[in-house]
Length: 105
Image (tube, rainbow, N blue to C red; front, side, top):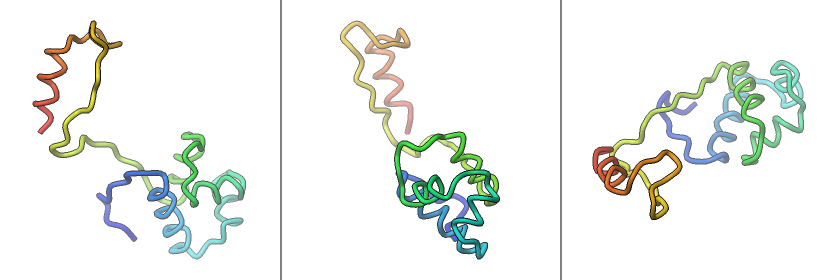
């Protein structure tokens, strides 16, 4: 099993982790899907890294397999925001955004 703080950079990695957990629990996809309240097709697509799956169902699978998803800021990663010329949707001007980019590390 991955460490508790394994980054999940994409849906394929999440799917691999779900599959590893299911196999660790000695469950077939059919049995795991039934226990999680989702269809076998959904679980298969999740394990195969499909990017457009429903978040609520994904979280339900994680919970029922004894996993949880935690969010935290990435260490020393600049925010990549390209604001329109007059600011962005949050009403921040370009100087404010530039200042925030430098404060993330």
